[in-house]
Length: 114
Image (cartoon, rainbow, N blue to C red; front, side, top):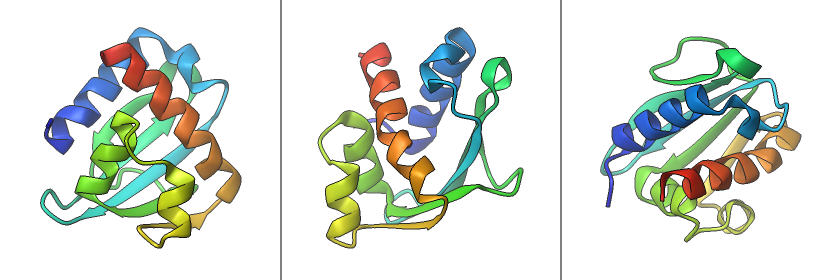
């Protein structure tokens, strides 16, 4: 299993390599992770100027609170975001529409890093 910081580093590299994978979404996602690898990370999606960063750099449009272990499963495609939300393992604040688009964005990066 990869460490959370490595997952975000891979997403950051993939964003810089091919920003088109964000499917035209312009938003700031914040991940409030607890559990084994607790921390705050953001995905800042702005077309060609998209990146991933540790910490809270900007005001998020959508905040996802999830255990780091569950986030890892979600990125790997082993946990469906909707199921995690419905079961209470994922809490969402802010723009729910953006949260729904995130699953597609993460899965496109997951396939790029495999």
